Length: 263
Image (cartoon, rainbow, N blue to C red; front, side, top):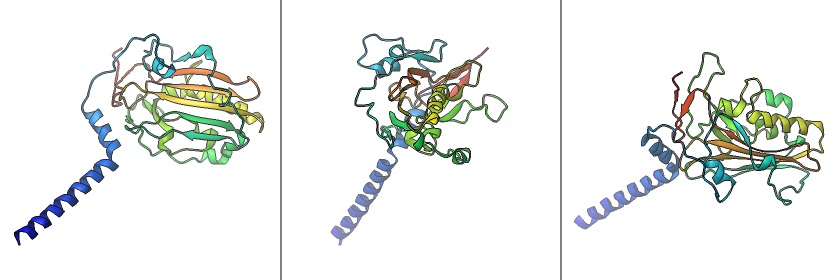
């Protein structure tokens, strides 16, 4: 009888352990983000540039913002290979899997007018509901658009109609995503250039790549590396890095919290 009771207890314990392991596994990304977020309240860390890094991403990771939101990379020349620039009549987009912290990675596309959503669909697109890593609803003013963060698309909605997709959305400042100040550049500057070119003709194609640049285990990217190159001509050609910053604000990239700077 005792052996039977011990057996039942052992089975119950085993079931509980299996359930706990399953819960931890399926919620591992959320758990890791919580641990990272709760274990630190440090301010943004500034790391000086390092020389002779292994690749472009490593070099960009260590850049520190010096007041210029957009800088050119490789003299503004894209680094796509000949294979990358092979034309596919249908066009395509490819989103990398989320990493172990649930962060979006490189997004690639061969853009064409045929992939763009109809104008009426664009106007009525659904509200974004995905909580991107490190996102906080922080007001910077009294207007409805005065928010510190946007949920920023890597491949813009206007290009393919992809909206609520976790692999395609990062936590980006308004200044990164769509800076409305006079003569300011942001992601929308280059997205508009590409969109205007695509709309001119069904035969226009643009090879496009957007990569969020993270530092270590930070949830919010330090910036975004964007490259675009038109196929068959040089009307679109850029290679830029855009800092994920907001003037007047100090951002903790590890967990997304932010404080206004004293003026």
